[in-house]
Image (cartoon, rainbow, N blue to C red; front, side, top):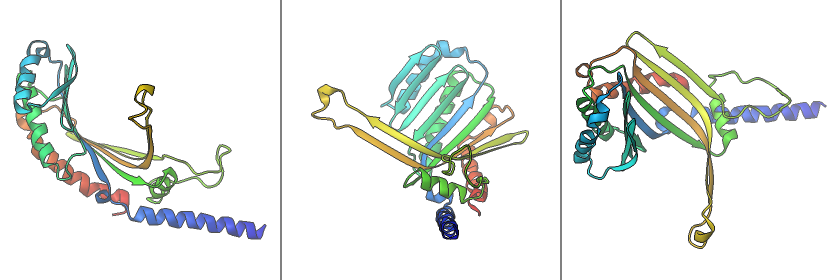
Length: 258
């Protein structure tokens, strides 16, 4: 009995030490930047019915390679390269997957797109301006990701067997929101396991092989947004996002013990 208890204690210490080592190596610079999004929300824009074609003609002049993904009277969705451009009755957004870490190109292009949408739809007020960044750090498996997450001591992991399950929790999540009268931040840190399954139809089996992949890691998801309505002329989207990156990078350090 004593030998078994000693061994169990040693295993717990090993897991804790392993998690602590993984957690201590974490900071935002160790995460890959997966996506960035600029979104504006505005009062119902009836002008979309009349001016959608003119708007997208102007967008096509700026990005000649745009490709339509979806179009109906309520929503139009195009892509160019790694970016998605969407306009709806009450919101418009520019989102880029795998952007450059500096985000300089994203700042410039997203601002240009939002200004085109604002001008063509006669938007006089932004109800909300949101800037979202999504980062990801990969781990060997979901167990290792969870160990690194819990080592940050953001949540207290219950000891022992719970709900008749001896294994520790998986895919934990930590979420907080701050809001003032003018702006807010929604922050999430969570473990995810992502699965990709590609099974080609039989007629292409000779040329396309099945693909199956599972990736586990930790997601850092931050949405920086305005709370009070603002006029378009009162906000420079590019400068506002640059300030947002500074704030997010500086104040997220507490997550990683900084």
